Amino acid sequence: MSDATNIDGKASAANLRAEISRKVALVKEKHGLTPGLSVILVGEDPASEVYVRNKGKATVEAGMNSNTYTMAENATHDEVMAKVEELNADPAVHGILVQLPLPEQVNEDAIINAIHPAKDVDGFHTLNVGRLNSGQDAMVPCTPVGCMVMLKEVVGDLTGKRAIVVGRSNIVGKPMAALLLKEHCTVTIAHSRTQDLAAECRRADIVIAAVGRPRMVKGNWIKPGATVIDVGINRIEDTSTKSGSRLVGDVDFNEAVKVAGAITPVPGGVGPMTIACLLKNTLTAACRQVQVPEPD
Ligand code: NDP
Image (cartoon, rainbow, N blue to C red):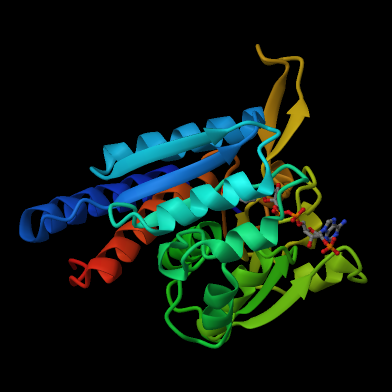
């Protein structure tokens, strides 16, 4: 059997970003609308700083306005809340993203639910979660949306496929399962208490791994020909590289690539699509708030 098709997230993301840039130019020209994304970063977590920088850069490249508000590690809950409220009230801000995790003195749930649902481009607000799960129009979290775009590109119609989502976080696992259900998959959600995870995975035509454990999903857990989307980003030691470390996913790629029909690499798979989908959500949010149609 030949190796699995490589699902090129970088290429898909580049296409999506080009499409968004084109649409942003159109809404500017037709309606004088420049979508704006504001990001709040609390503290100095190096990984979060990199993510926020990349998001800001991509936003500007798409022709949108980008603002990042960096707050001290010891910022109080009330200070973060005040910033959210200020951005909620600003008509030039169409998307608000609070980079997680927040320091422990800040109540994460309260901050997320203080973001105006129409500006909640991460799709974490309880109202958007409820809307997604009841099949209504919602802001949907960027990583699952990105996974879905890639899945549809490679699989096409998902109706009737057996899908397993390994991981049940609010950010990835649960919204991913909701999107798969919406596409008429038969969905299993697995987690740390799942019994015989290998057997559960082997039944699936689609495996989504969102666990945060390096190379946990083995090649012999994959049904031959299945489509594998690896959300995991794990840094492992590797003395052969200049930095002494490298990124790997939650799937053992070298094993799985020999069995799967198609698979995302890490890096270069889900990661780039997440940012592209954030831009997409920001454009959608802006058009809805100003009540102009989103260009085709
Ligand atoms: P969380 O830590 O919030 O959730 C991990 C999930 O995995 C939990 O539901 C947990 O189960 C489950 N889990 C842990 N260990 C096992 C196990 N041994 N067997 C089965 N399930 C297990 O992580 P996230 O969802 O936030 O992120 C998952 C991964 O995706 C991480 O590597 C993260 O870095 C990456 N990520 C990548 C993004 C991208 O843009 N590519 C964006 C967001 C995340 P339980 O609930 O029982 O504890």
